[in-house]
Length: 136
Image 1 (cartoon, rainbow, N blue to C red):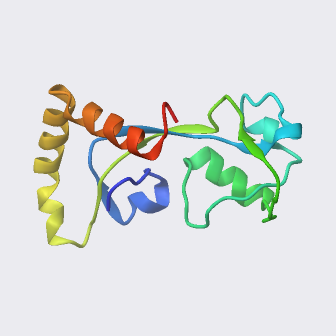
Image 2: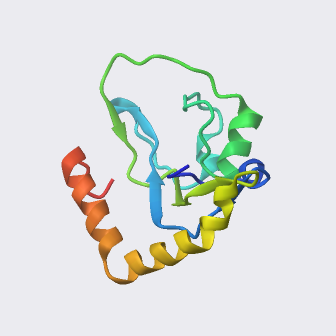
């Protein structure tokens, strides 16, 4: 798998490569409901949605389970709060049962090489430009 965040449950089933990307996730709110977000306690008492099966790190995943955020559909303009909700490392993951797990040292070498020679930075910027995402 590519583009996976580590969490404890996933760590029981997968071997993870070294991080190759740092991903920021943002909170989106109705334009007229913007508030100063700094940490998870700022979300207490609020209702929100997220993709089932997603992981945003152990702290946020625990907050979701504890507060049982509910799904709602919004039919109006939303905006991203300026402070990232979370910023997590992104990894390749290989099932611990897969014979491909033996490839992980080679994958890590290629990640290091691509980081050192700038290939990763170039690829990320190229795809951000294609998707229209500048910095987010």
